[in-house]
Length: 150
Image (tube, rainbow, N blue to C red; front, side, top):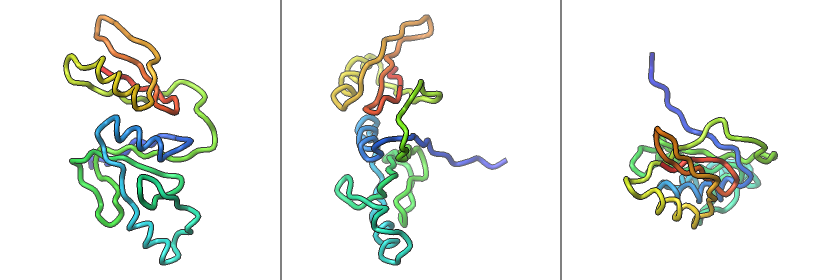
Protein backbone atom coordinates (compact mmCIF):
# COMPACT_ATOMS: atom_id res chain seq x y z
CA UNK A 1 0.00 0.00 0.00
CA UNK A 2 1.27 3.48 -0.87
CA UNK A 3 1.77 6.12 1.81
CA UNK A 4 -0.81 8.88 1.47
CA UNK A 5 -0.07 12.60 1.47
CA UNK A 6 -2.41 14.68 3.67
CA UNK A 7 -3.13 18.17 4.98
CA UNK A 8 -5.31 19.27 7.86
CA UNK A 9 -8.23 21.43 6.67
CA UNK A 10 -9.84 23.79 9.17
CA UNK A 11 -13.16 25.57 8.60
CA UNK A 12 -12.85 29.28 9.18
CA UNK A 13 -14.70 32.59 9.10
CA UNK A 14 -11.51 34.43 8.09
CA UNK A 15 -8.97 32.06 6.55
CA UNK A 16 -6.30 34.73 6.12
CA UNK A 17 -6.41 35.83 9.75
CA UNK A 18 -6.28 32.19 10.85
CA UNK A 19 -3.32 31.52 8.54
CA UNK A 20 -1.53 34.53 10.01
CA UNK A 21 -2.17 33.37 13.58
CA UNK A 22 -1.07 29.77 12.97
CA UNK A 23 1.99 30.78 10.94
CA UNK A 24 3.17 32.87 13.91
CA UNK A 25 2.11 30.25 16.46
CA UNK A 26 3.95 27.37 14.77
CA UNK A 27 6.80 29.20 13.05
CA UNK A 28 5.31 28.18 9.68
CA UNK A 29 5.11 30.17 6.43
CA UNK A 30 1.89 31.49 4.92
CA UNK A 31 1.85 29.90 1.48
CA UNK A 32 2.36 32.22 -1.48
CA UNK A 33 0.07 31.25 -4.36
CA UNK A 34 0.13 34.72 -5.94
CA UNK A 35 2.02 33.89 -9.16
CA UNK A 36 -0.27 30.91 -9.81
CA UNK A 37 -3.39 32.97 -9.06
CA UNK A 38 -2.22 35.85 -11.28
CA UNK A 39 -1.67 33.42 -14.16
CA UNK A 40 -5.10 31.79 -13.73
CA UNK A 41 -6.85 35.16 -13.62
CA UNK A 42 -4.86 36.45 -16.60
CA UNK A 43 -5.79 33.36 -18.65
CA UNK A 44 -9.46 33.68 -17.66
CA UNK A 45 -9.46 30.38 -15.74
CA UNK A 46 -10.35 32.07 -12.43
CA UNK A 47 -12.38 35.24 -11.82
CA UNK A 48 -10.68 38.16 -10.12
CA UNK A 49 -13.65 38.17 -7.71
CA UNK A 50 -12.35 34.87 -6.28
CA UNK A 51 -9.23 36.65 -5.06
CA UNK A 52 -8.22 39.18 -2.43
CA UNK A 53 -5.02 40.74 -1.15
CA UNK A 54 -3.66 39.23 2.05
CA UNK A 55 -0.22 39.01 3.61
CA UNK A 56 1.01 41.57 1.05
CA UNK A 57 0.05 39.63 -2.08
CA UNK A 58 -2.82 38.34 -4.16
CA UNK A 59 -4.52 35.33 -2.59
CA UNK A 60 -7.61 33.19 -2.91
CA UNK A 61 -10.49 34.92 -1.14
CA UNK A 62 -11.78 31.80 0.61
CA UNK A 63 -8.59 29.76 1.17
CA UNK A 64 -5.27 30.26 2.92
CA UNK A 65 -2.62 27.78 3.99
CA UNK A 66 0.50 27.57 6.10
CA UNK A 67 3.36 25.11 5.73
CA UNK A 68 6.46 24.05 7.60
CA UNK A 69 9.41 26.11 6.31
CA UNK A 70 11.63 23.05 5.82
CA UNK A 71 9.12 21.00 3.83
CA UNK A 72 9.00 20.87 0.03
CA UNK A 73 6.42 22.79 -1.98
CA UNK A 74 5.27 23.02 -5.58
CA UNK A 75 7.08 25.96 -7.13
CA UNK A 76 4.38 26.39 -9.80
CA UNK A 77 1.50 26.75 -7.32
CA UNK A 78 3.17 27.54 -3.99
CA UNK A 79 1.27 24.67 -2.32
CA UNK A 80 3.10 22.78 0.41
CA UNK A 81 3.86 19.09 0.02
CA UNK A 82 4.52 18.31 3.68
CA UNK A 83 3.22 19.50 7.04
CA UNK A 84 0.42 21.88 6.14
CA UNK A 85 -2.75 23.52 7.49
CA UNK A 86 -5.38 24.77 5.03
CA UNK A 87 -8.05 27.22 6.19
CA UNK A 88 -11.27 27.37 4.17
CA UNK A 89 -14.01 29.95 4.55
CA UNK A 90 -17.37 28.53 5.62
CA UNK A 91 -20.58 30.46 6.31
CA UNK A 92 -21.45 28.84 9.64
CA UNK A 93 -19.71 29.56 12.93
CA UNK A 94 -18.09 26.98 15.16
CA UNK A 95 -20.85 25.43 17.26
CA UNK A 96 -19.30 22.73 19.44
CA UNK A 97 -16.21 21.01 20.71
CA UNK A 98 -13.55 20.10 18.15
CA UNK A 99 -13.43 16.42 17.24
CA UNK A 100 -9.80 16.86 16.12
CA UNK A 101 -7.27 19.27 17.58
CA UNK A 102 -3.59 20.14 17.41
CA UNK A 103 -1.17 19.47 20.24
CA UNK A 104 1.64 22.03 20.24
CA UNK A 105 4.79 20.80 21.99
CA UNK A 106 6.88 23.44 23.70
CA UNK A 107 10.50 22.97 24.73
CA UNK A 108 10.98 21.40 28.16
CA UNK A 109 10.17 23.89 30.90
CA UNK A 110 8.79 26.45 28.40
CA UNK A 111 5.06 25.68 28.42
CA UNK A 112 4.05 28.75 30.46
CA UNK A 113 6.18 31.05 28.28
CA UNK A 114 4.68 29.48 25.14
CA UNK A 115 1.14 29.96 26.49
CA UNK A 116 1.93 33.63 27.18
CA UNK A 117 3.33 34.06 23.64
CA UNK A 118 0.25 32.45 22.11
CA UNK A 119 -2.05 34.66 24.20
CA UNK A 120 -0.22 37.71 22.81
CA UNK A 121 -1.00 36.41 19.30
CA UNK A 122 -4.74 36.21 20.10
CA UNK A 123 -5.26 32.77 21.65
CA UNK A 124 -7.11 32.32 24.94
CA UNK A 125 -6.55 29.88 27.79
CA UNK A 126 -9.55 27.62 28.36
CA UNK A 127 -8.20 25.46 31.19
CA UNK A 128 -5.15 23.84 32.74
CA UNK A 129 -5.06 20.04 32.86
CA UNK A 130 -3.02 18.09 35.38
CA UNK A 131 -3.32 14.32 35.19
CA UNK A 132 -1.04 11.42 36.17
CA UNK A 133 0.01 11.21 32.49
CA UNK A 134 1.11 14.83 32.24
CA UNK A 135 0.19 18.50 32.26
CA UNK A 136 -0.98 20.72 29.43
CA UNK A 137 -2.91 23.90 28.74
CA UNK A 138 -6.05 23.82 26.62
CA UNK A 139 -6.30 26.97 24.52
CA UNK A 140 -8.50 28.37 21.75
CA UNK A 141 -7.26 30.11 18.61
CA UNK A 142 -8.85 33.46 17.61
CA UNK A 143 -11.86 31.64 16.08
CA UNK A 144 -12.39 29.36 19.08
CA UNK A 145 -10.76 26.18 17.79
CA UNK A 146 -9.27 24.25 20.70
CA UNK A 147 -5.63 23.17 20.81
CA UNK A 148 -3.33 21.98 23.57
CA UNK A 149 0.08 23.21 24.61
CA UNK A 150 2.27 20.61 26.23
